[in-house]
Amino acid sequence: MNSTAARLASLLAALYLLLASSFAAAQLQTGSAIWEKDIQKFEAADKANPPKPGAILFIGSSSIEHWKDVANDFPDKRVLNRGFGGSRIADSTYYAGRIVVPYKPSMIVFYAGDNDVNDGHTAQQVFDDYVAFVARVRKDLPVTPIAFISIKPSPSRAALLPVMSEANARIRAYAASHPHLVYIDVASRMLDAKGRPREELFIEDRLHMNRAGYDLWKEIIAPYLP
Image 1: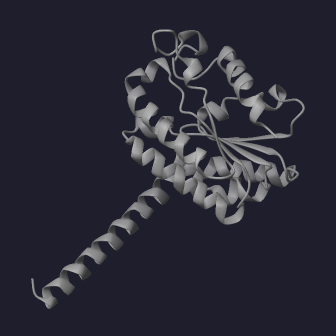
Image 2 (image 1 turned 90 degrees about the horizontal axis):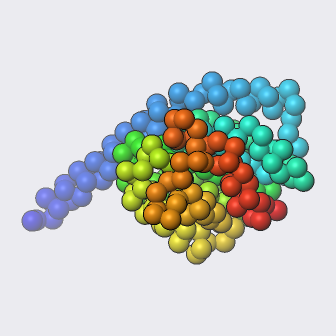
């Protein structure tokens, strides 16, 4: 290949990457926009009753959203719940400037990835999205602890356990090698002796947790909270 052809190939490759990046960004914006009403509700609540800086922020998908009594479960802590059901990791990244950064939390407790895997994302994609979430938060909150709750094994998604386990392992190793990152393992204790999801921790849909499931999470998570 002569120099002219090489330059052309390099230019086309750069153009392809630019277009691919723009397309991915557009997809993210379009996908995350479906949560706009949820985010506006949070903002309206914040305007009516502004949260004091320094709370422990629980954020993520339906396992957080459905934890309605999370504040009561940690009565000696100041807790703020900003979960929005059905969301993926990238959605929390997209809205971090509105529902993470303004609170100046003392810690971020994050649960997501469950829906990502169910939507067909690989373990690497889940990991990459989590790294992007951390990077977005770090732009404004460089030393705030971020605790990732491991992707839970649920009976309705038992077939996805290999991908979830791999994603958890990658995020665990990442947290271990970076300051102010925490990995909270709930997954191992949500499996029975045969490695199957524990049915007694879930409601009838076999996806969302019942009180017993949240009691287990409370027990596991409590020692990590500041």
